[in-house]
Length: 508
Image 1: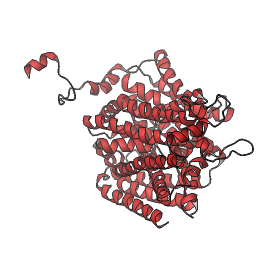
Image 2: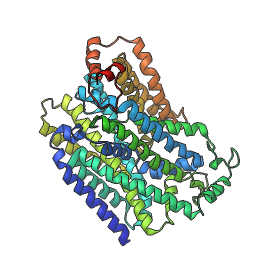
Image 3: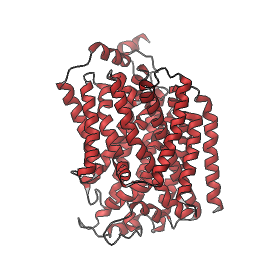
Image 4: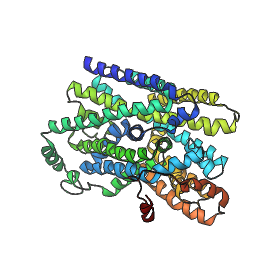
């Protein structure tokens, strides 16, 4: 117990210390929200990765999908690394940084307003972000309860409040830079923690090969050894999970805004590699560990239901105290990093994209900072209230928040970076389509799995935007050219980053 408490005290002290150190970067709106757009590759990559993977993934998703799909659930982690990290950085990273700086945009709703010349889009996008980020923020706490029950004789509510207060403190003091620095520290803890936990769990089953044989012996209605097979017992639904959890990051405001803050070209290249490797280890490791859920000792209830949130804690309950302490710090790291990103995104979006344009148009920098810090505290308190006593509809909303946000935002953001022909009507159609599919499915359940409903919403947006754009009046060509001219600006780079033309080589 002394070791576990000591680990927590050190962890919390470092988080607050970083917040105090980073306060010099949070003296204006650009610094508070984006770190002055001067964040290097390691900080950006770890900020992206730790915002991606929270306790929801480590405890909830790894247990649930590992139990359903066996070792094949590792494909979710691989998809997260290749599609959700590598391809996201390659396709979105550089263009997002260039275009958002050119438009002087600091949030995703503000990008929509300036890219498509519509203040109404800014308001609508900020409302969608607010409505669906808050339940997701509350869900971040869910992974803590069973783990703290194993490690400490402390009420879950106390843990939630302490985590929220400490996260709020360092974000309010230091803004984005405090979040990014702490994400680096928390990410390193997550990397070492997940490797140590996997090694310990497999060792407890007699090693990797013995654990696989044990898993292969678990009966399945599909085929013998399904849970140890390449694609598992349900490949189609597994694909839906891969799409939602991987492609979904392309449309989440708290993820995309990491690209706004990238410092330079080198940061893009290095950040892409670091972020991908981080996802391979953390996400791949989480789902790989969850793949052995069927041999974890979890017993289904009489009606056949399984308490998925108890699976990973049950797997870890037999570990030595020092490893349980590491797991607690690991899950806290995952939760606090995601929580800080979510509340910073929510407060900045509501301040800059809703309150300022609609109610306080002459809000200066000082007032904006005050508003953002007040709203940060408000969002932290609201998420705690929801997490301590979640009503049923909120629990449902948590599951569809990714689908609604990515379904609404992914297509207009992605196409808006590359295609000059996207129309304002197409963006509205994507908003309606993304939110409409996921919310209506809550009530009518025409798509059995909320995960698959979210995947359908994203794919539908990718189809709807180009179709509606071709059928509706085109945007003003001059304004669009003015936006895209930033991509054609000439810059000088080192030869190792770009080969010169053949005729230029003779000159040099």
